[in-house]
Structure formats: structure tokens, C-alpha cells
Image 1: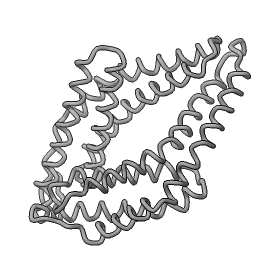
Image 2: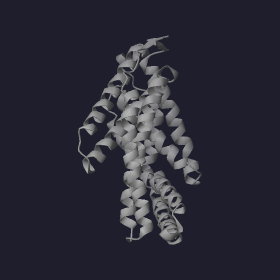
Image 3: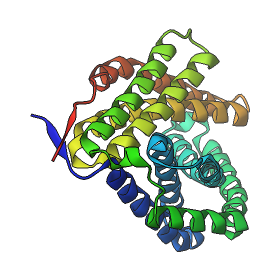
Length: 287
């Protein structure tokens, strides 16, 4: 059965900009107060806004790449804190599972101290970004865009046809990235190719989210693909971190092996997940 979507393409974009701009602004006090998951949620809101501007460029008058760049800059400023949080939790949890003979207590203490330092060093970068004039200008620009988007004539077209084209374009882009990764031999180049495929899947997922319920199946498949590729990327980062921290002891060797095994498992999962995600997005009919 065809999925139906109402309004125009401009209506879909406007709703997305308004929701995510409000979300970004509302999260600032939570980030400043170091509330759990606030940095992560602000980073997601910034990514969703950047994705909306990129995937809907053909529906807007003017060049908004400057705003996209500022959203990317904000995401990077938040990234160190978020990465330290996720990576620290992963490695400390795994260190607790080490056998006693693997010098568990020492490795655990060293990882906890390392994570404390990383978290402490990341905090000023987050606050500097929020205190900056650039952030104030970005919020003002986004608020103005959301209140009155400079929609062009194409944005007035029915959402069904336009959003279907957008989803299919993002799907093709993801398929090209996955195909490129599958042609790449094992090694650092493959890791980079899979990371690029993950970013494409994430952008496709966000495009599906903006369409709401009618694109729910597509969004779910892209999220599953993003998750398995994210699992792979997390293992790459964790492996490299363990290698950098290792003193050659058995405990760090066990942790390193865990990351390598996780890499292999994610790659084993990928063909099955892609088999589902490879399905072309269904046409969205106008409500």
C-alpha cells in the first residue's frame, strides 16, 4: 500500500527546521549544567539541521552552506566531550570484565584516570563554543530561517513527489558509499570507506525522519545500517585508543582483542543489514 504524505515539500522542511531549531536552543541550559546525554542530544539536533539544509537545498533560495559549516563546527566542538563519554564507558566496562590475572585493577584504574582527564579537557571546549558570538549568530540565523524559510517555487510542489525524490537520492548516495566500501581491500582505507558509508546512511535516515510516519520503514532500515556501521566505527576508535594507551601488558592485549573481534562481527553483520537497506524507498503519495 502506498504511503501518503500531506502538504508541500516546503511544509516538510519548515516543520523540520522549526522543531530542530527549538530543540537546539532548549538544550543549551542542559549542556551547561552537564545533564546526562545533553551534549549528545545537542549534537544530534545540529546534525539534523545540517542534514535538512543539505538535502533540501533545491527547495531554498540562496546559499546556506555557511550555516551548514557553522553547524558542523558546533558538532565538532561537542564531539570531543561526547566521544570521551562513550569511549570511556565502553573501555571501563570492558576492563571490569577482565580476568583477575590480566592485571584488571591496574588497567581499570588507569583507564578511569585517562577518562577523567579526557572529560575534563573536553569541557572548556564545549563551554567556549556556547559562549562564543558564533553560536549566538548561528542561533539567530536558524531562528530566522525557521520562522520564515526562503522557499522557492519548487518547495510549493506536493510533498509526495518531492520527498520521494529526496529519499531516493539519499538512498542512491548511501548505496554508492556501501558499494565503494565493499570494493575496498582490508586496512585503513576500508575503515574510512565504511565510515563514509555510515555518514551517508545517517543523512538518509535524517531525510526519512523529516517525512515522518509515511517514511518510517525507510528510516528504520537506514537506522539499522547506521547502527552496524557505527558499531564498526566505535570499535576502530576504541582499538586505536587501546593501542595508544597500552603498555604491552596482557590486560590491554585482551582489550585490544575485544575491539578487533567487534570489528569483525560488525563486518559480518553488514551484508545482512544492507540486504534490507538496499530496498528502494517506496513512493510517497500525496494525502
